[in-house]
Length: 109
Image (cartoon, rainbow, N blue to C red; front, side, top):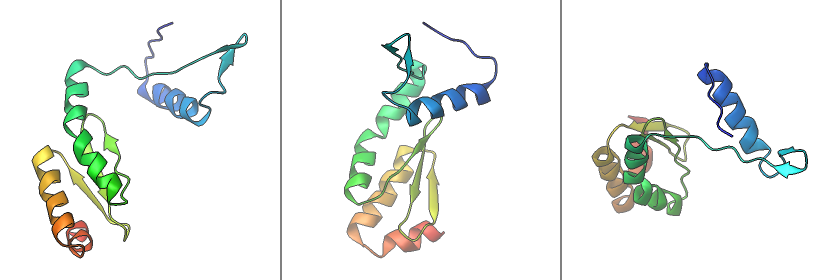
C-alpha cells in the first residue's frame, strides 16, 4: 500500500510512531512496515556520508543525517556542528582523529 499525505507533519508523526513501535505494528494479524520514500538525488547525497558516519560511530559519536543531506555532529561536551558538504565534515573528522582535544575546540565554534 502506498499512502500520500498532504501535510509533512502527519508524515513525520507516522514515521516516528512506526520507529517507536517497530515490529509491533499489525493489521489483521499481518505485520506492517513503514518506509520513507526518498528521491534518487537524496539517496545519492546520503550515500556520500556513509563512510564518514561509520568513522564517527567508531569515535563514539552518533551523528544524525538531516534531510536532505546535512550531517550534524554532537561533541561529547554537548555542542553541535552542522555540515552541509562532505568536504567540511571530512576536514572535521581529520582534525578529531589527529588531535583528541580538537573535537571539543572545533565543536564549540
